[in-house]
Length: 251
Image (cartoon, rainbow, N blue to C red; front, side):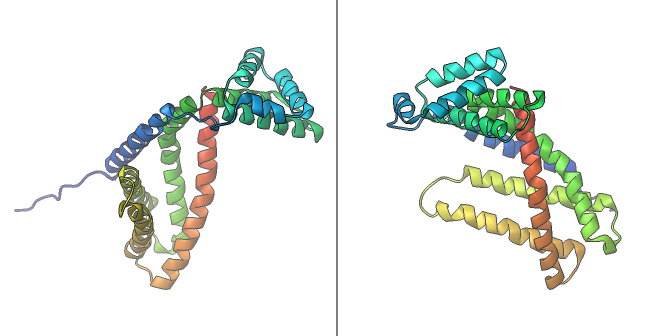
């Protein structure tokens, strides 16, 4: 009897793995809400003691740039017994003053970003939670770009773009599963060696899958593997940055 081999759609498998990973990640980052991000054994009074008049002037300049509601929130942050947030706010003020001293004109878009940074400083956990929520979208957008990169690197293979896309889906699915296992690994003992082993194992699998799918020799595959890793890292950075910026605008 002829039977059709049962299989799971690559898209469904990718969605399952990505949802599982980001759900697991959200549980880990969610626990950070119970952690005090303040610097231990240092008080706000101690920070104020080392703050110079220039620091105070920078802060006042920042307050003039911010919207009234956000300036009020910034003043409350400075009054809180939270050194980490206090330092972050003074660091932002110093960066803004450097822009002004360099002759840069602070436009509306930049003012908006400074204001959103105040929101991040005020509630970093909310920012972290929203970032995790937005990350799957940016990763899904990255997929077709990576498939296009594969199409260019293996242009002589004469494979259809959708074939590269399916391979990209499988590779990212495996990556999400590996990352999920890494997050769930207990700490201590032999488990401390398991995480780096999984990290190395993923790249070994990545290399071997390239050789098998595209059927090329060890040397040429190694060169293309290195190139793909390098370019993908360049693609990943703006994707992460865009996720942070989009999340910041939602606060």
